[in-house]
Amino acid sequence: MVRIGVPLKKFTHWNLEFRRRIQTQKALERKIPLSPSELQYFERLRAEKHRAVERSGEESERKETEKTSGLQVEQIPVEREDREGALPSLPLSIPRYYLDLVGQDPADPLRLQCIPREEEWETEPLSMEDPLADQRYSPVPRLVHRYRDRALILMTDQCAMSCRFCFRRHFTGKGQGIIRQSELDHIISYLKEHPEVKELLLSGGDPLTLSDEKFFAIVDTLRFGRPGIVLRVSSRLPVVLPSRITRRFAFQMRIRQPFWFVLHVNHPKELTPKADVALKRLADAGVPLLSQTVLLKGVNDSVDALEELFRSLTARRVKPYYLFQLDLARGTAHFRVPLEKGITLMRELKNRLSALALPTYALDLPGGGGKVPLVDAPDMTEGEGDWIFRTPDGQEYRYPKE
Ligand code: SF4
Image (tube, rainbow, N blue to C red; front, side, top):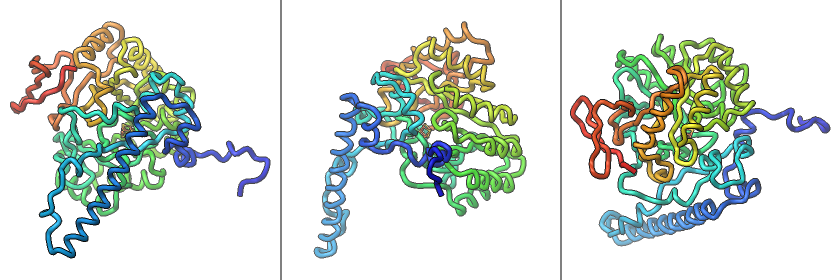
């Protein structure tokens, strides 16, 4: 029971903060005035939702016709565009903590990452629903096995923050929820049959949106099923909801080593004093820390911003691990930095930073070709409108120049 006179702040808990995250335009507008482009995004969303409702009404009507006329639904012609017109959009989700860091300027680097803009509705021929072909490399539900010695588990589709550039938007926030026991059982059977898998990446969604109890119960089930497997958890929470990293959580990580923590961080402004506390808790508990960053237009596509980010991470005992070229997910092209510019930035960073502070600049080849380093990439040639990569097995993959 909340006693009168005790400040509400005293009762704040990460889970409460998670539940109170901003999820509607109305709640967002109460905190920050929206720019024309941001408003336009919501306008279009409403129009698309309206169309979806109309389509579902037509669908029911069609089924009714089928019942009364004896015709099969498939035999009644439907415009393809009507079925696929609406783009898959990422739900709005911003922790209040993160929104408080966002500036009034529509070009603020944190704002660009969390508030959608009208460009999200733009399509381009090269964009894909599932750019890394997760579904093709999924031998059992919720498991992606792309590389011989490592696999990835989609623990939940929930995130504290919906990053507007997310490449896994075909899964993120789409209502599949937390992994089920039956799915976990199938994954463990698969891992037992595949002893070549030595590392398991826990991903999603953001796995740390699960409670400690659920998260570590899953971790322990995996460890019990495949003793000795090296675990890695990938999360954005230390910088978007730092209160999630409690002392208890850090301790539970500590007693389950080898267990690596990969922090997703994109801008030095995300490394606030609260984020520092979260990272310190993990580092002090002896949890090895790595970072991954996505190169994003308008957010971090300058040598100075990247240098500051990687130096700050190193000072916080986080080894910068990967700088990723943006994947070709639908609705994210406005974040894309031309590959040539990325290579130039990286070469400049190489002159400024030690090997300790320098991540590997890499691209996940569109369509499931795997990761390739981009600086001094062994087989990369310039085509007319794109870059062409050849993998050792002779496959060709293309990435746009712009
Ligand atoms: S936290 Fe990761 S999975 Fe979630 S929206 Fe951001 S990039 Fe996508």
